[in-house]
Length: 296
Image (cartoon, rainbow, N blue to C red):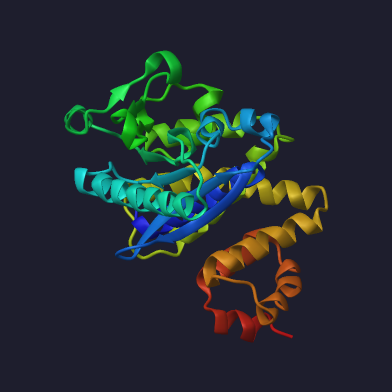
């Protein structure tokens, strides 16, 4: 998959799922040479145990401050070292703050680094002395030596359970496709199902307008297309105008980065068309063409 669409999806996805549990910062910069943390998470003082349990394994990651670094392709040794540098920069921030405030810094209060990789080879894991704590965490979670506070999540090795579903959505190929099947099978009133699907729909539309996609991208688009079409048809059948508006708003934001006042004026005229007509127009026409055709 082309890197940018997936990077944006994975950051938005983790932000959306973790927001109820604490503060989430996407693309947080750290000191020293300019580096960005993909997703920084700081838990609320009062933990919502029900919401955390809904997220399964991801909810367990959210029990402490965390750096989450998702990768579309298998993380390389160099990329993992870069993630470790970010962790150490943040650790330095914690130590400076503790010294300034004259507080004792405990090891358990320091952030954990979770490297989310679709696959991880045996040689890579051996190279970082990463070991699977199967008894406490199950298959697929490999912890680096204790004081590094880092784990490599080999998504392809995670068991196919509800506990791991929200992480397997970030997998690749068959692993991701199977997770989408499981997501689709969840009850329709499951809030996380709705949130995850909406973000996947946005990823689908981003890929459709991208010039640089591969076979895996096309397979993902094909897998999501029936769900997306069904979502629009159900909204039409139930007369859910608000639902349709949300879909159009999401498409416009995905295409153009934001929804300003000028673009907002074309939503109503677009909705006067059947779904099968306005969707291709939203994906194909430029901003200027859309405004010229549907602007008031």
